Length: 258
Image (cartoon, rainbow, N blue to C red; front, side, top):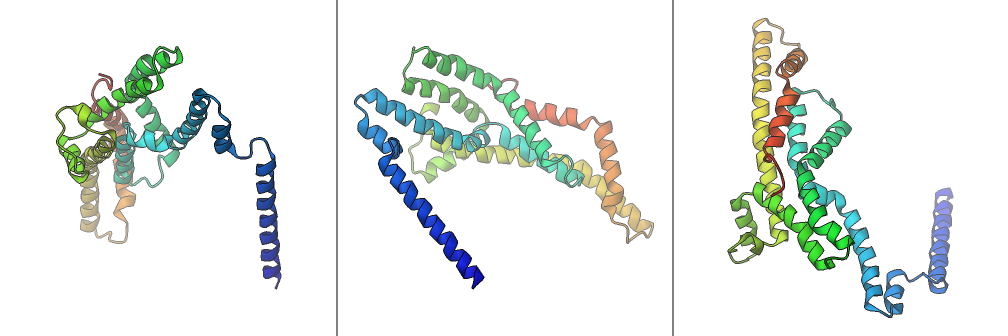
């Protein structure tokens, strides 16, 4: 009975809150939000400004997906995850460190592209030299160029066939909604290739340690407890972070900008 009474009270409070919100929306000057702003607009510029605000909020909500799917972040974070699994260090480095490192490496790799976007699209648009559509076209072009450099033609052809689109004559004929998934699966393919190479030396250490323990008759001792120190010391002596990060960044090319 007490649970039912509590549920009835919560339901009543929820109904009162919704009714009060609806009343404020009817009486308040800004209650109808976007629809009222569009209805009361007397000039096309006012509607454009309102829609730009909505578009900006939408872009901010999709910013994580845009960052992950159109930059080098995917390849970097997958490779770092493979490294941690190969070394069997559980949660070391922790997820926050790996994600932070992947973000800063992404900004480092994508900085030439972002500088070109700022130079050719953002600054001219702020100064009133170009319109919104032209600014958007100038902004997306460097990102498309970066994705074209990393995406395999086979992956692009796959999504063109799925979308039932004609074979493009130039890269400009490839739609962005086709290029992005092709770029992502190309990044995953390369990341898994790098992960396989990372796994090999650590796998050899695990096999050697397991064979040694078996030969010594120490069947009850988990090999991972013995191999972990050898993995760490090998990684440190080989300057693993220097080699991994250096080759990982260079796998995108010396510069991301055209």
